Image 1 (cartoon, one colour):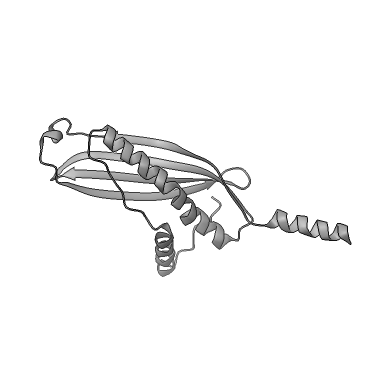
Image 2 (spheres, rainbow, N blue to C red):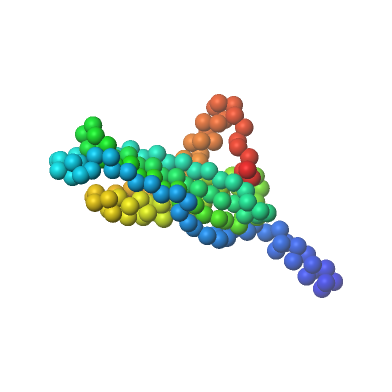
Length: 164
């Protein structure tokens, strides 16, 4: 009887949901200041446009790469002061989740983990370009994920498979 209990407990542990961050890294980094040095001699009245995107792909069994891309274009008046982009990536071990939980984990939870790293990398890049610090506000990836699901339902699209 003890062997059956131990086997049952071992099976439950093997089938329990697992999540583990394996690595965080910069996949791609870009900075361009097309109007330098003239832009530094102008009155600074910036407008900031932020574009963010996520993508994920399955690696070997249970491992997933999630890439968060932040692209920032800052204009001073009508002139582009700088364009900065970072692709912040992570490798995550994720196992034993149902499809909905896996989709949410890859689409919202992992980007929430990556965002502070991407924000710091962008800020450092901009400062190294001799521009004022770029302090991006936090992003609610859970809300963005819910909006995307809502948009897909209204459009009659099937949710993207989470394991691609």
